[in-house]
Image (tube, rainbow, N blue to C red):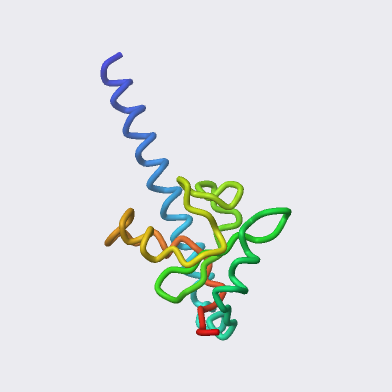
Length: 115
């Protein structure tokens, strides 16, 4: 039983890894066209409209790039551990994720401009 348990643990880890690979590859395809999406611009005021409330998409900005978190499970309802969509969350992101490369899993929808 000990070895069966160990094998099940490893299969669980491999399943999670495979899922992450699938997400990464899917987002690579999305991000190949992201340069075109960077043509879309948002002011901070416009970004506020994309807070995930009342059926609206949920967007966040990090380092001037706007990402879609609408269907990201960890952003359910437009919030993520108390951080609300529709804002520039660069500071919060850097405090929490630092050097992690989690943004590659998100769709780029535009960039922030002054305004």
